[in-house]
Length: 204
Image (cartoon, rainbow, N blue to C red; front, side, top):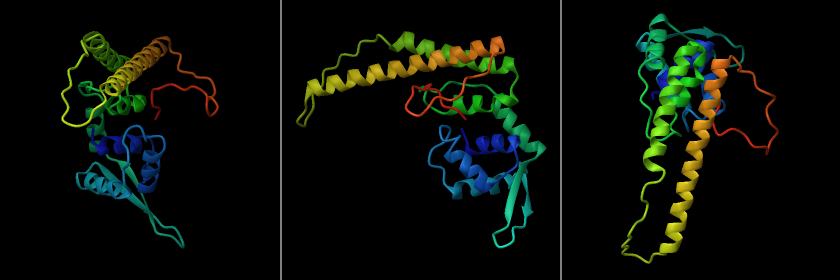
């Protein structure tokens, strides 16, 4: 997934400055792309402008540097929608951001398109569980360095169970969203207080 796809989606929701885009990537969009530098944002904006995907307006600010507000052109909107509505191949890891990036821009999808995306993701994760959850995980290590086999085996088991719990929670969250879309029930109670249990699915 390219940074340009995220930037186009955010700009289509609301014209923004480079600073606004960086703030989004540091807060609401932090699950979609990590450690994005301001220089990367401005470099991408410049490249998108050269391609005709975005244009900008300059707003003078007395006593401060002028601000450039970017908006998406018709060509840029086509590029974004081609990505958003194009074929989705689930990555090997459910934690990878491609799926979350797409559903974070669900406002540009129809309910049926969102359901199709969810069905593709759910089918892939259920197939992974069926194939790998109960595989033979025994190993015969032959290390050349000092090695604690009991410690290694215990940590491997912990990692396996953590991964299984993560995938199970992801499947349950996707099933919940799918049900809500079908029922037309996308209202949620007030956000829980700090320290309370929260969903494992990132939010945009």
